[in-house]
Length: 428
Image 1 (cartoon, helix red, strand yellow):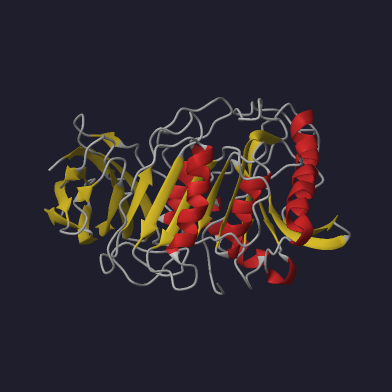
Image 2 (cartoon, one colour; image 1 turned 180 degrees about the horizontal axis):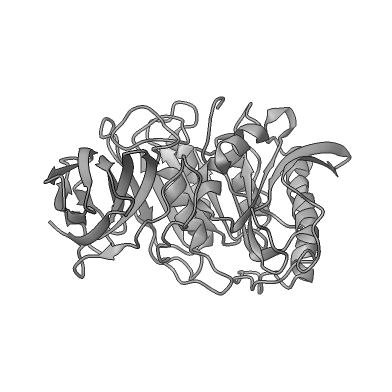
C-alpha cells in the first residue's frame, strides 16, 4: 500500500450538528435522501483559499490541502469531495494527481480537500480522523458555499478504508463514497444506514485480497436493500474490467462494483498490465457515479452523466458526447476522451448491458470526424479506420451479464478537434 500517483479521492463528512442545523439529517432511522441546503459560507466573501493549510482537531495540529474552484462565486453552491491518501502517501501526492483524476473532470463545480493522515495513515484511533473530517467540513461549509446534499469521499488502499469509515459513521452527511482496493482498517462505527457505494478492486490483489473489497461492498448491499447477485469478474490474463450496477437497491442509493484483472493499484488500464493514471478508466467511472447525484432525490439505477466541458491540457478534451442507446434489450455505449496531444488523441468507449439477461457479444458503431484515423485499438476488433467504423467485442469481453459493462480503447491521429460519436450499439 505504498506508492501511488493518482486515483480515488472524494470525500466527505460533516458533523451531525452541522447537518441538522442545515436541515440535512436523514429521517426515520432507515434514512432518506437529504435535501440541499445553503451553508453559512454562501453569500459572503471567503477567507479560505487554495493551498496547504492547518486546523486544530482533537488537540492536534492537522494539515490539509484545499482546492477552491477557479472563478469561485459565493452565490452558487459547490460539491465537496474529500480525497484520502494511501499508506505512506500524502495530501500533496493526492493534490498533484488531481484528486484521483477527478479535479480535471469537475469543470470548476467542486471544492476538493485532501487531509493528511497521522503517520501517513488512517488508523482513526479513538475516532480522531472522523473528527478531523467533521472539523474540516464545518470549517469549509462555514466559509465557502457548499451544497450539503453533494458531499462525497474516496480513496485508494488505506484511503479507501477511511472512505468506508466515513460512509459507516456519517451516513446522514456523505452522499456517496468510492473505495478503491479497500479493507476495514479504519473501523466502521455504525454501518447500518444506506449510502451510495462504488467499490473497485483487483481480482488478484496481493496486498488486500479482493475478499476485503467484497466484504465492504456487501455492507452497503445490505444497508441499501439491493438484490443479491453474483456480479461477473474478469479472468486473470484478460486485462479488462467489469462494472456491475446492482438491481433492487433503494431509490437514490445505488451500489456499483468494479472488478478488474490486476493487482493492488488505483489506476488499472484495460488491455495493459501496466497501471497508468492518464489511461485508467477509474477516474471517469467514479466521476460519473458521483455526478449523477443532484440536490433532488435521484432514481436508481442512476443515469449516466456526460463528462464536463473543460479540463487542463493533460486531461480529457472538452467535447465528449452523451451515451447512445442501442436497441431495446441490447446494449448502450458511451464515448469519453482520455487524452490528447498535437495531432492525435486517445478515446475510450464503455459498453453496458442495461437489460435483464446476459448478452453474448456486442457491436458498436463509432463515427469519426473528418481528418481522424484510428491508429490502434484494444479490447475489440474494428473494421475500418476512418468515417463510420464498426467495433466488435474481443473473445474475452463479449459476454456481459445484466448491468455489467466493459470498455475498449483506441488512439487516433487527428486534424479535427471534434469528438467521435457513438451511433449505435447492438448485440451481437
